Length: 56
Image (cartoon, rainbow, N blue to C red; front, side):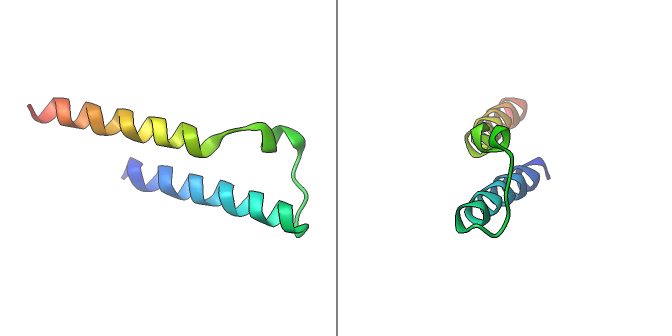
């Protein structure tokens, strides 16, 4: 289940960035400075590694 939440957060961030670029919405500059997709990818990789260690 955490994998799905990482995917949803990453997709939502990218959609918000695209809408900001198109001018549909305006987001604060601190939001644009965050790198959420890479953070989600890192957490997902760590989660996969930890789950594989538990199975062994």
